Structures are given as C-alpha cells and as structure tokens.
Length: 128
Image (tube, rainbow, N blue to C red; front, side):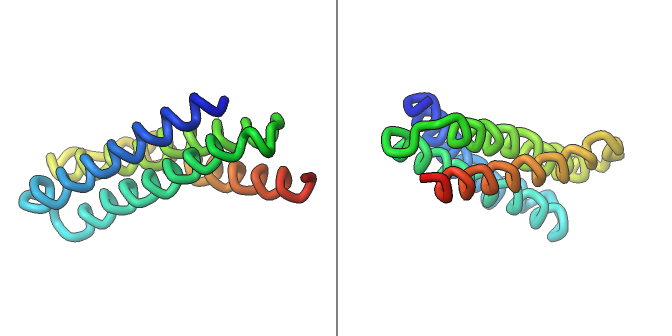
C-alpha cells in the first residue's frame, strides 16, 4: 500500500495544482462567485487528502495495518466523491445546466468517506 498511497498522493496533489490553476485562470472568467467557491472547495479538499495520502505512504512502514490501509482508501474515495462531485456541480452550473440530485448526494457521501478515513487513522494511532 505504501507505494500506491505515495503515487496516488503525488498524482492527486499535482492534479489539485493543475485544477486550481485552471479555476483561477479560466473558470473564474466565466463562473460566478458562488460557483467558484464550490470549485475551490473541491480543489482544497483534494489537496488536503492528497497530502494525507503522502503521509500515510510515508508512515505505513511504521504503522502497517489494515486500519491505515482502509484510511487511505477512504481518503481516495472521498476525493472521488466529494471533490469530483463539486467539480461536476461547478461545471454544470457554469454551463447553465441543471445539477441532477444524484450529483448533489455524492458530496456528503464523499465527506463521510473523509471522516471515516480520519477516524480510522486516529484509531490506528491509539492502537499503536
């Protein structure tokens, strides 16, 4: 898992920088302020959890265990559901399209994945 978390953490962090730049230099010209806040939240949470994955990748040698692994997988799922849904919502709003309810439901599901990841990481620290 160490290599997987390091690779995905690095890729997600790099993508976060790219998406942030696209938002600041492209999307900002055509999106309203509320839509930009939605987009920026997705970018921020993606970066936070990319850094968390890098941390997990570096720490797996010291804290090997299934809870640490599950924590990383929950972080990855959180990025996909939470940040991904916010990017989709911002894109649809910018194109003046209706946001399907299913897309809106994905955001809190992603938030729950993030929370579960942090709780599992805490439990793994407490067990150590």
